Length: 604
Image 1: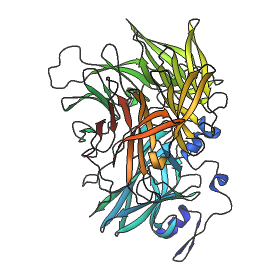
Image 2 (image 1 turned 90 degrees about the vertical axis):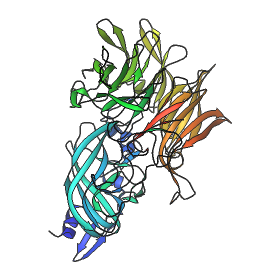
Image 3 (image 1 turned 90 degrees about the horizontal axis):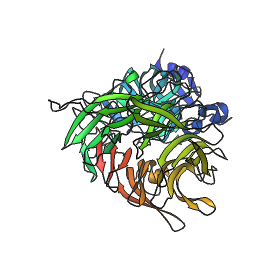
Image 4 (image 1 turned 135 degrees about the horizontal axis):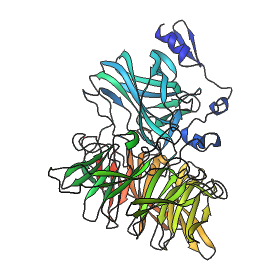
């Protein structure tokens, strides 16, 4: 069948074919939302009762994607639309929705395939997608189209509960001259029939959705061969750059770093744990996937000097068809290592059984007695738990500090020990109005009792609070999604008073001005954090200078808050932040960027 006829029959129901002319017929009867049962974006679906209950609810840990691939004779990337974001939003490419993104190629090109990144429901697997390469969004001249069988690679899970995947399509074999073209995707098929979303990163591409019009562009690569390339550059000259990964023996795509009091730096990648000392990266452990897990969380350094962390997967395969996660320790060999680098020993100290105890645990802190606290999904009622791991001569003993039952806070995503020794946290939902809470847990009669300090009310003060930190005066600082109804994120301060606790909105971000907040810490006396871009500057945000993230400081005052940008990153995004043991220096990672585009460690 000629390519044009195949495209008209299999890719778009809004295109009428007649001989050699393709006419685009606009759908004007009903908006896309009314025509389909699936909201057009992943964030809207995550807030929809029809779909949200099917998502996992991990703790809100900054997510770091793998490194963007560089154009080279080995990987044949001839166009890259910037890195995977994984946290901002994603657009539906099934249930009648079509997304089109532009790309540019050089003078001599053979298109062999493409990669793109998706948000999917946990345990679901993308199988196929209809594609077309055209001269305009949803139509114009159709150069080739078809249905691609996808090679699916699971990467991680983001803070909204979606599984983040990389999809690869091959076998296109399309010759194109120099110019601008559009990659159109729709009719995605998954193993469980769920919505599939195309990750948005607002790269340089122009993008459209057939249901809503112009949108931010998506994360994808075009592969093949070309005499020229169009790719976002990586900048090794940033003043905060501490170490650039090469993608060789030192690995790539760092996702977090942790510092001990001796100055050693420990970090994680998607499949590994490493140590940086004296300018040398040493690989301490490589995860095997499956029951052994992958994608370790940021590490805690225990009182015994061992490293402690979690993996979202691994452990027991008893959680809706997927692994339930695990808590592990990592220790050096018991005897002196004769080689330059010896692997450390991983020990699983707790793995949920998926039968009501917990699932997908996340660690928060050690207390003064050496007990390890954390939060997880699942639990007795399915709304998450706060748990404690107590060391003993026989290993570690697991106990539930508090199981959320759905009548108060639900789905905890932050946990810390307050200045008074009580536990404080944020619930992603629940409370009086159903939009999330800040809660307190206090010892009571051999157990712990919950007190809701504040219930969020959606448009008036935001929803889904997280990133909770506390200053020396006992004030809490945090962040809500969709702050004040304008689609941004609102920083808040929660302060004790004689009447209870008082919430003060401090500052509301706009994505195109500040980027997406990826984490907060207390450094010195003030809350600090990072955003991941891109954010653009200028009145029109068109062809202006792009930023890929910022380091900021947040202070209360002037009846609200002062948001001060301390540093701006260009061409590579920070995706994790922590504070050094001195309490002042900020450290973090970029999963791509650095001198070699393979990831970087930075400090400020």
